[in-house]
Length: 468
Image 1 (cartoon, rainbow, N blue to C red):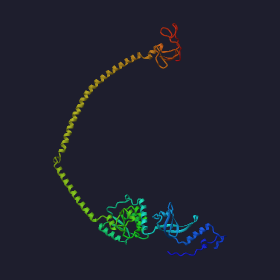
Image 2: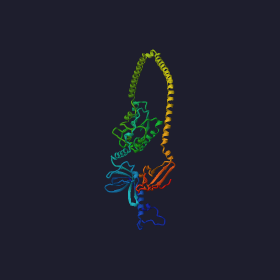
Image 3: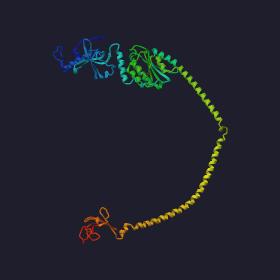
Image 4: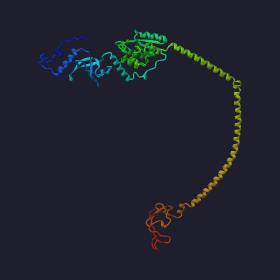
């Protein structure tokens, strides 16, 4: 690249002087501020350095915590570089210290830190391995995202009605696909979708075609997609290593077969596809069943079905002959004779049972009369005995005894006082009568002989009346 630079003119860079100020003189009599110098440098770089600018050099001091900061150097100079995080995520590979790369961007001056650096928006490795590095980086990313997972890949249809073939109509692959499909099974339709398969815009066209066919699959009557092209260099096949193509294949709901380049070539679309074929011909053979093989299967199924029908008919004939020899079919009245005999036998049994029940009823009636009389007599005797027991109980009823003027005395705890020895002087006692109770306190205790317990002969005990 040949770039012609105009002579540097600081006055043009600074622009017209502000009103009421003097323009700095070229002899430097009036000094510039740091901010003015920084602005002068920045404007000079923007106006005088071409953009975009491609710089080739060796990476050193790479720092990529968020944004990337590194230096590009050769044997004579070093220039600082920065890659913003949003740009770094789309680069496709991560350089290492010592890698030789081509950086594309623009030069500017960062006034707060006084840095003049290259702002990179594209970074590519130098040499024959550049594409290989980008290919491996994209494969690593897609593998982490599950794009190559075999569990998500869809099975191919057994009998497709129509197949969409996405390729360039000018490629030799079209001829191979059409010829092989006609030989395999001419009834399967082909929908040819013309796209660019190499060069600028090819990846975008392939991705758009996949999404369009998948979106309109029901209207188009398509059951599968074949993406193919002939062989070529790594650069020729690079459109099929694009992230947009990989995303379209991953999102596709139709089964997709990819056959790109020769058998030794491997592209990203083939790794994401539901099936990879070495050649366009092989891809068609996977998608379309062979008509000759289908006819053989149909003939075999026809022979087997005929055999099974004949065997079923033979078994049916033998069963009819066996049934024809059965006694019931020779004498159908046999089916009615036995049930009639069973009905007559049951009728006789029923008559006998009714008669026995009638006779048993008379006996039960007589026994019932006798049982009633016996029960009445027993009940009378039980009532008389109950009255006698009631009279006996009345004679010993304590309440009746009390009613005749008797009483009995207990301690307050309920213990019966049977003897003067059961109480002591000062003890509270309770005397029960027919109409209530009297609580009193023992003043003296006198025995039957008239002596006070523990007192001299001739003394007696007086009881103090308590509350009723």
